[in-house]
Amino acid sequence: MLIPLREAAPKAAIKWLEGNHDARLRDFIHQYAAPLSTLRALSMEELFSLGKIGATYVKGPIRVATNTYAVHGHESSGYASTPQAWGTKFGQRYGTDKNVIFGHTHQPFITTRAYGFDGKVTPRFYMNVGSIMDPTHAKYVKDGAVSWVMSFALLHDDGKRVYPELILADNRQFMLNGRKY
Image (cartoon, helix red, strand yellow):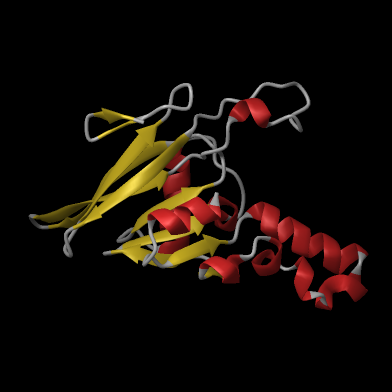
């Protein structure tokens, strides 16, 4: 997946944002195989050849657009059952003046709120970008039931505001700018 991404965007800054599975591997090695923790071959950068495609491995939050930050959902210190609850968690952790995009639950959504007062109100959003993983391949889910939706997001930044766009896939196809892919 990373090589076609680099080929499609040869000049883009590609960043791999640390997620819970990345941390799980690192923590497992430190706890159960500490002598192996110094092996660079077990780092995310090496396991996924990030250097070969010019990608960097980062931990969130990272600024991705005007007043918009990306973070992995596991960094919110727990799970939230509703979009509004995710917004509350991120607002408490990072401030309500920012837009936050994240992934973790594989269930895409956008929730909005107004920020400001005295006639100077601007929209803010929290957006779960979902996942590009095909849920039929989640064989590790014991009962086979997942409510994941394949999706991804686009951010349109005019330098003053960011306009989010959530793209849902159906049967591995999606529409973008009136064209089916």
